[in-house]
Image 1 (cartoon, rainbow, N blue to C red):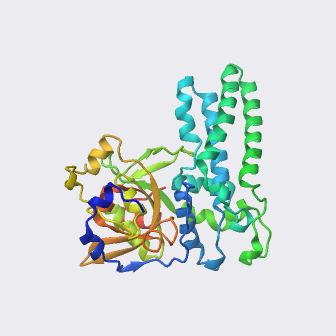
Image 2: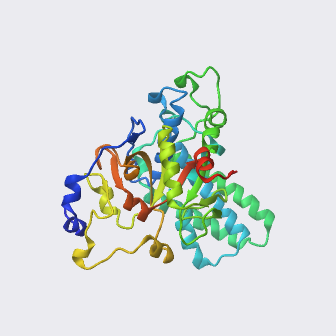
Image 3: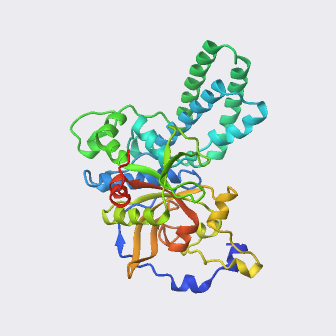
Length: 382
């Protein structure tokens, strides 16, 4: 393996003395490998959902299809893109940036929640994720060819709303067929027999009965110091907002209390974070996300604070994972157990140990349970 600049700056003392003991841990039996799919947000969501549904069904049978989710994620993004082209005014030069935003596999917890509530969910064997699905950039480029041609037609008929609606309908039908050729055709029925359900149901019916209530228990939360706390905001974080989702902005201390309580309840915690200086940590076999793992002072560079990163729009949402444990010593949080989706062969058996400073600097997006929010913040949240 070739070395890079990070290898020259690593703090060996941290690697040699990392403490992987946790006072609270949530049981887990699967470490997914997202490969090059950029579906971290969906993998984290699926594992979180598996954990909660294991109270109803055998955990080993709860293998859900990521391919089904990404199929409809792409379908919804293209639909939203066409809608914006029709209803808003854009210059030709802006289309390049719109395509970057909409022709990709990026998403967050709000995307996960919206797609499952709208399209339901199926089991992995019904629509498996195959090797072809792990090459999103190639698929993106192919779709751009098709969608640019579509947009050209929409632009030329901008003044005829009836024509635009008909064109859009036909284009979306074409896109559905293309998605079927690439990812496979979404099944119309959920395989109830696998979970010993004595009734036939569609993916949406299964979700309505067993999944939607779980998802509805979670609120999208952020912690951004450049916005007022205890208020809700519509944010996109470079991810198309499929449902005009509002994010409740809370201080980190309140959020950490909620996370600890959620872990005590045996529930994993979905979170989104910024890479910033994470990229080297994400690939390291030691599975360490510590603020001072790399000594940038050796080359004369000081890391900027999270507040400054926010100020200059440098705090991007780049990756989603799950908190599955925490180590509390003398009533103080020392570290967090983090489940990644790079496979058990990477990081430390698929996990990271994250120190509290790293959390403060890089983690800022969460899916938190209403019950814990109400208990800690003393406010009723819709």
